[in-house]
Amino acid sequence: MIDDIFRAEYGRAVSVLTRVLGDIDLAEEAVQDAFTTAAEQWPVKGVPPAPAGWIITTARNRAIDKLRRETKGHEKHAQALLLAGEPEEEVGAVPDDRLRLIFTCCHPALAPQAQVALTLKLLGGLTTAEIARAFLVPEPTMAQRIVRAKGKIRAARIPYRVPRDADLPARLKAVLAVVYLIFNEGYLDRADLAVEAIRLGRVLAQLMPDEPEVWGLLALMLLVASRREARVVDGALVLLADQDRSRWDAALVAEGRDVVRRCLRWNRPGPYQIQAAINAVHSDPPTDWRQVVALYDQLMAIAPSPVVALHRAVAVAETEGPATALLEVDALDLDRYHLFHAVRADLLHRLGRDPSAALEAALQRAEHPAERDLLERRLLRLGLAAEQQDRADDHD
Image (cartoon, rainbow, N blue to C red; front, side, top):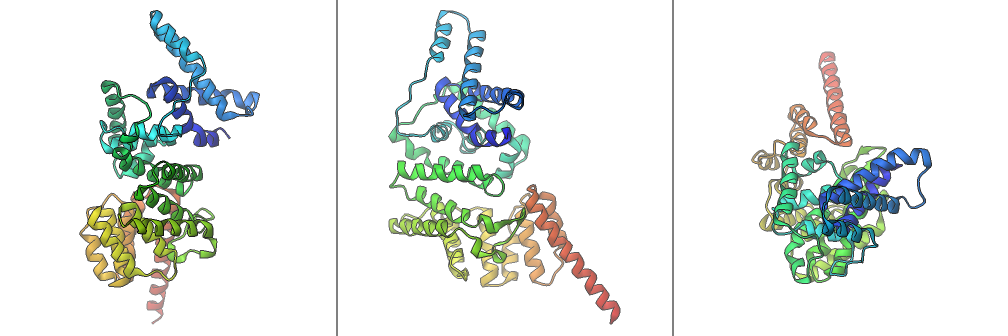
């Protein structure tokens, strides 16, 4: 119960306390203390009627007490007393505390990756290990980035306030990246994060209705979310080709495709719009793989990356064959990425070559239990097939 409330309310509590206190470290520490208190008291006294409000009130009181203990002089004491009153609602361009936190953490004084990592930790309550996995970097590297980002905020005295309208577009790229990573972290087994990311996407679309990439991200999340019930069945991952499309959410598919068509009318393509278009093509069976390759070509032209090239190669395998695709995959530097090895294994298998080493490499690098289970099942089927072939050879 407390774990569920933590996942659902941690980001909101940190966001509210950051606005009230103006100090992210103090806000985060106070919210963590409040949840520790909840873990001690709620099993004995019961869960309060409004647990989220209880957490915010308790955290705020803890922060005020800490200020009073640690500060000296009349001015600091007056500051703590001021905090004890009801905080005034801040009026500004961003009408949502959690979205405010994203925009403030995406201050241009911070490096882009630090902006995203810090916001993921504060808003979603993600562990450093989860964030490191999303960035494909070692956990100690990510921990150092987060510490440096907080240090930069303190040293530069970056204010936690609502950005002016004129400042919003400059921070949009990092904000969209944060929202999408929150969605990806929640897609498989933290539905609350995925739902929150879509909610934030809708708020962004209302806030910036003339930004096609905002709508592109919203469409992308809607289309991917529409397949969730078919993607994970009884805790097991199901690949797109094997999914039961009757389990797709038809309303989300229809909305996502409508938003993609809206983006096309702008004729200002961006990475999220193109990814949404690719998913829209997948939602209309049978998949037009040549159109998918063309869209990936467009994506590579404006936002090239090894991961994009890997996904393009998967589509190339359907249009030009696995041999051509394998040549493209083997040219990529993605050894740390488990999907790189999983794709290689599939291509090798389709070419009649032994994929076991590639599957083992993918399994060594996969961290999510469902992903590991899928790879283990593929290895098991491979082993059973080899045994059957051996018995057939012996019989001959």
